[in-house]
Image 1: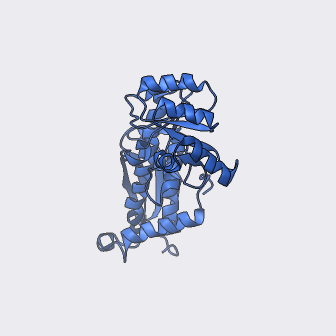
Image 2: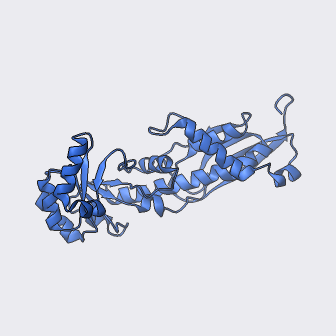
Length: 292
């Protein structure tokens, strides 16, 4: 599954197997009673609303883990815009196995497509400008890798992956250290230049303090749009500026026009709506000998 940049594929397989166990348990009692075990067939996956598709390789991997006799043909590529009624995958194999994997496969597909779709909406709002739409750490526990992948498929950028790959000095750190300068000094004493340093600011005064501390990026936390514009002028390109807090589709374009470099949006991963898909069985036949 080379489509992921930062995912431990062994751990991903383990999580997908656990998702299948959670749903299937000791077996699909409905399908076992209703569908003959010797039936093979073909099903199609159709998107029911406009959006950005994401998670198709996960769908394929789920069926590989479930039943090696199943063949999945992907008819779209993650990151593609799709329209209602469009077919994005064809699945062939034993009907019993196709039906057992249906809900788990569509759950992942709808969830990740929802993240990618909302991201694309934000990205489209700021197209043509310098600002980039970025995610946050407000992600589903244990599934951050997939959600950050979905953000990229929607055209967004990833912020730090966790607490370990970038320094972000926030309000509580500043208060604990006694100020921005002292917090930055302590970080540099401990880590030197090993990590980029970002500082969360709550006022113009703190922005000045962060500039003087020579940090790599300043976060403007919950700044009104007019004060963001003033901060951009104050910084004058000496470091990156990130707008954060209460960013919506209604105000993101105005925020971008202030001249900030990055707009971080927690809603990409904590408030996206699932994109609706359906799976329909199109044909059935008797399994050929030797395939059961």
